[in-house]
Structure formats: structure tokens, C-alpha cells
Amino acid sequence: MINLAQANVLHIPVPDRWPEQTDIISLCHSLGPAPATLLIGLGVVYLLFGFYWYKTLIMVNAICLGSFLGLVIGQRWGNPWVGAFLGGCLSAAITWPQMKYAGAVMGARVGAVSGAGVWASFGMDANFAWTGAMMGLIFFGLMCFILFRGSIMMYTSFQGSIMLVFGILAMTLKYEQVGPPLEGKMLVNHFLLPLMVLIPAIAGILYQQHNHPSEMGGVGGAVKK
Image 1 (cartoon, rainbow, N blue to C red):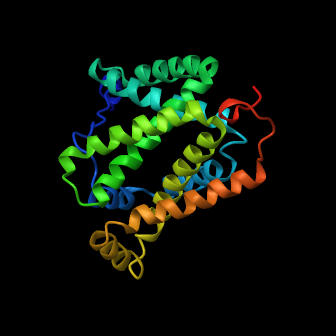
Image 2 (spheres, one colour):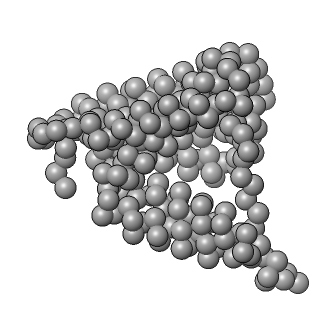
């Protein structure tokens, strides 16, 4: 019989270093068909409709991030699910009235991932990947206050591209005829994975720009609330 106290205990490991391509490949291998399909579906939504649904998508990001932080904090006190629930609710309550600042936080997160990824792609010391992450975080975060509309398109496109590529990799690497050769090329060429993310991201930005032209002028390409 399962002890309910033990069932409530959950351990979420917090990474102590920036993941390398081998870690990303291992993560893709560990993803099942259902999470991979979910990633692909959400990736398409972020990639193609990021600006059209940006408030909802930013709220989803905030709830997921707040729930994760609450889960990590809550597991220290033996109540991870309570922490996740409170963290998600608190993040949603803060995000909705402060949407522009939440967009900047989203951009900072995308910038940190992009900056650290570029740092690792050039073969620099992985122990200092946080340097590239900080540069991307600051640049992308500040861009949201200068060009809000364009920044939202860029951030959602990059996030959608990352989700889409990781979902497709999780599906593809499981096939023996395709997976091992692709995995070998990714390990040899460190620029292959960034290019796989960059190309769909650029396509998503162009698609959103074409289908959602600016409706009004103003500083930073502001949009109607």
C-alpha cells in the first residue's frame, strides 16, 4: 500500500551547470511520444500565433515558471504540489496587470538561453556559459521596452522554434535508421542544433510580421491593450 506522505514527496533536481548538447540529446531520448507531441503542438502555436495570443502565452509561461519555482521550494518543505500551486497562482496574479514587464522577463529568459547556446556553440569554456547568458538576458530584456511588438514576435518565435525542434528531435532520435547518424552529426558539428532552431525562428518572425502588421504607431511599436 502506498504511503500518502511518501507519494507527496517529489525531488526535482536543479542543474548546477549549463546543459551541453549531450545533455540535450539525452533529454530528447528520455521524452516519450506524448510530451514530444505536446512540445510540437505548442511550438507551432508559439511560432505562428505568438503575437496574436501573446497575453495568453505570456501567462502560460509565467504559470509554468512560477509552478516550477514553487515546486522546487515546496519540495524542501515536503509539500511540492502545494508549492507548485501557490507559485503558479502568484505568478499569474503578478503577470496579468504587468504584461509589458512580463514580456521583458520572457525576453530575458529567451535571451539567456540564446546567449548561453551561442557561447557553447563557439566552444568556449562551459563553466562561463553564464556570461553569454547574462549578455543575452540584458539585451533581449531591454529590447522589449524599445520595440515591444517586434520583441514579442521574436521571443515567441524563438521559444516556439526551440519547443518544435526539441519535440521533433525526441521523435526522430528514436528511429534507428535516422537517430544515430543525426546524433553523430550534432555531436561533431556544434552549430547544427543552433541552426536547426534559428531557421524556423526566422520563418516564424517573418510569418507573424506578414500576418500581423502594425495597427498603430507609437514608441516601441506599442499595441492596443
